[in-house]
Amino acid sequence: MNPIHHRLALETKGFLADIEGRRLYELALDACSLGPCLEIGGYCAKSSIYLGSACKEKAAVLFSVDHHFGSEEQQPGELYFDPEMVDPYSLKVNTLPHFLDAIRRADLADTVIAMVASSAVCAKAWKTPLSLIFIDGGHAEETVASDFRMWVPHLLPAGYLVFHDIYPDPADGGQAPYHVYRSAMETGMFTDLPMTGSLGILQRKRA
Ligand code: MG
Image 1 (tube, rainbow, N blue to C red):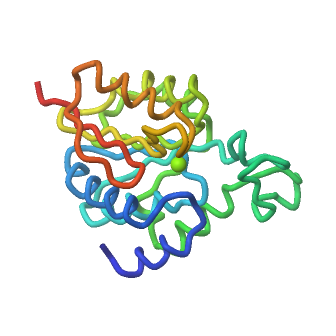
Image 2 (image 1 turned 180 degrees about the vertical axis):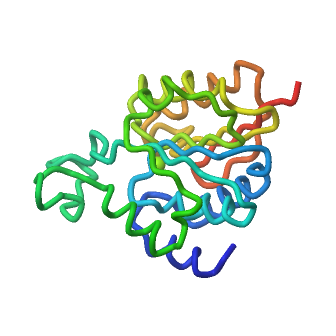
């Protein structure tokens, strides 16, 4: 991985461990010759830099979907609220300036395409086959299930479906991504690959 990208990814705010980011980079590097990558939940662009670095190497692109208003647990008074994410004009959470600043500093504006809307709205009009889908948006059961349902039809054979925050033990974290990851496995559409940290990694079968 480009060492400048790696340093910037480490410095960028987010909830992704470096080992998880490096795995995303490797998966994107393997997949992105087939078609664009897509991530749901761009936040401040930490995962976008890992994925985007691979896409840039192969002259591919990454679509990054996020309304940038922050998720439920990032609102004032909630567990993951960060006062630095409050926009001084609207006094609301707005992660878009942080996202754009990180993309500019990483020189990835020619690779990462921000789609500023909810995942469900973006998916409605989507037609482009994707080589990798990274699901890390809202963590409510229905949100993760809807991200899976709406985007997976666009995943190419041999493409990767990756979930963040997979915790088989409820003591370690919320269960919604894990439930959807399990039900994805049960469809028989995917080969499950070894996890890295809390990344659950599935590869769409070629048939
Ligand atoms: Mg996450």
